[in-house]
Amino acid sequence: MRITVITPNWNGERFLDQTIQSVISQPADGVDLEYIVVDGGSTDASLNILRRHGSRINKLICEKDNGPASAINKGLRLATGELVGWLNADDYYEPGALRQAAAMMAAHPDRALCFGRCRIVDESGVEIRRGITAFKEGFFPLSSRFAIQSINYLSQPAMFFRRTAAERAGFLREDLRAAFDYEYVLRLWRSGGAVRVPGPPLAAFRWHPDSISGRHFGRQFQEEYEAAVADAGRFSPQGLLHWGVRWGIVGCYNLMAWRQTRARGC
Image 1 (cartoon, rainbow, N blue to C red):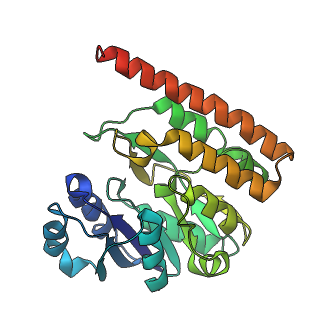
Image 2 (cartoon, one colour):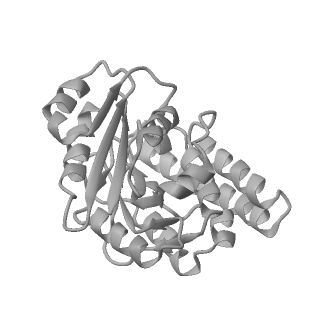
Image 3 (cartoon, rainbow, N blue to C red):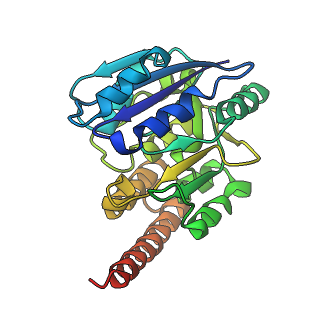
């Protein structure tokens, strides 16, 4: 099965090499990797890193874009894989992730996407926020359209979707800055739903102060709520549940930020 992986990058030199290594080390029996990297005009050492791995990158685009959603859309237009996923330049795949995803989607040809476990790690790669991970995984047995409209329990780095479903869903919304992935999941779900990949984590999401989740979590959950009510209805049970979940999560994030500031003595 051919799988296309898209990595959007802009000045991501700090973690980019590890991200690339985690992708190009994936091919195994039954997996044909197509790797697309879209760089938005980096001014750091990113291009040197990309040139070093040039022989393992199938398609490299280096030009200005309008943010990560814009960069991913460029990759989607070029993708030829039966399955597609994107991996941001600060995240990484765990060994065997693509093989596991391919096997699960081959066993469930009617499903539009698959998802698996995803660790949250810090800048050094140490796992953090285990409580948040456990909270999200608690919804895995309840996975359904109702559940995904009520709360975003999928971790984007550990998600892969059929290109045919993407063709029906269209492209990512470039007007969204923090929740374009969740809004896209809601549209993909309409083409056959999702199946969970059991077993060990497929990927690691890196949380750090400069990440989208680190800088814009308030906007992220606002955009997620708006996407949920657009899909399910503002006064639907899912919309009302999402409203409550949103404020609960934002409150927890604000509390964690306050504790971190206090621990630094600021």
